[in-house]
Image 1 (cartoon, rainbow, N blue to C red):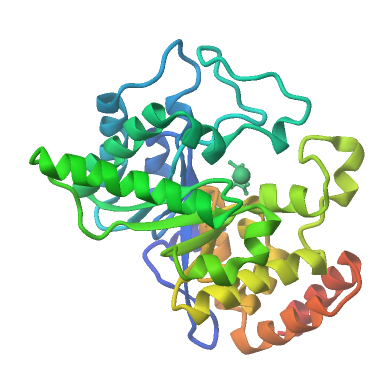
Image 2: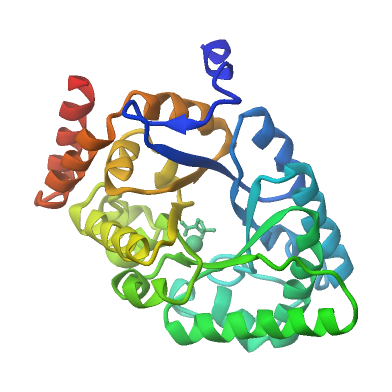
Length: 324
Ligand code: PEP
Ligand code: MG
């Protein structure tokens, strides 16, 4: 079976009616790039940079970070690499930073909130990324954006760092797309406004689901509420994709849902442009998508969004995919 799948390694990803989508992989360290390439991913849809900060006693320097980003970009050649800026806080703590103990860490001081409050730490990362940008096809992504102001502030800091580097004679790529993760309901709801100012969206369903259903992603007692196929979530995703496409922007997904075989038909139908998943799922997803007809999946997604509950949706997916 693996042998069959490997034949798809250098193929593009298209539906049976010829609509192309992009399959990327998620990575956590530069070492992960090898399996990404072995599995025929078309890019990296999420590079979680937390590894740089964790399991050590002090902040990583600009040069250290530069070397890591450069290694990944060079190895991926011209394939896109979406690097997400620091997403520490929530369940991920750093011993050497004096982070507040919080009652609700997932609703607290994490990711972009913490980065915008620690400008020196954030600048160091942005400068390292900008310097690395000439070594490949870099896209920068900010996590946990809840308001347009947060995006504007982060983007302004990135521009400031770029201008500073250029003034010092450092080479920086001129076409770095700057996007955001959509993982907070406020951002999914206001996607039309965000779409005017960002270059792309990547939907982080791991968090978007927990915030939509107010169900902690780590708490088994409420895991029954953690429902990727729920029409409420599908409508949010639909809103994001529609808003982006109205402004000619692309939308990816980098949460677990992007690699889930029950979700994929729905996501194809909703018009998702890019799917980023664990490397091991890429070839299977490519094979699955090749058998899906986009126009049928559009109908499926439409009906799913008008269903009352997850069970109705999964039954619909079964019916549609068995029919084709
Ligand atoms: C997500 O929230 O879906 C996501 C990809 O980010 P993380 O899992 O790192 O929070
Ligand atoms: Mg997240």
